[in-house]
Length: 69
Image 1: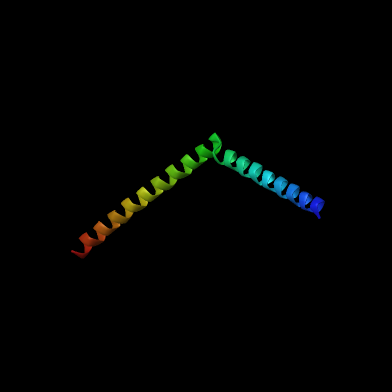
Image 2 (image 1 turned 60 degrees about the vertical axis):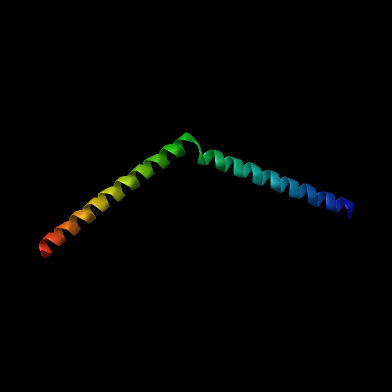
């Protein structure tokens, strides 16, 4: 029973180790410069899109208000 417990402990340790390695690799890939660059590009694109949408919405709202008056 002791040997089987040791085997299970080794399996758990190896599983935890592989999990840690996987998380480290994913963390590194997440914060690699290329990924950071793509994140910045997507963020700037989304902000410019939202700004243009809000300006067009405000323009259409003011136009409709002028037309109604």
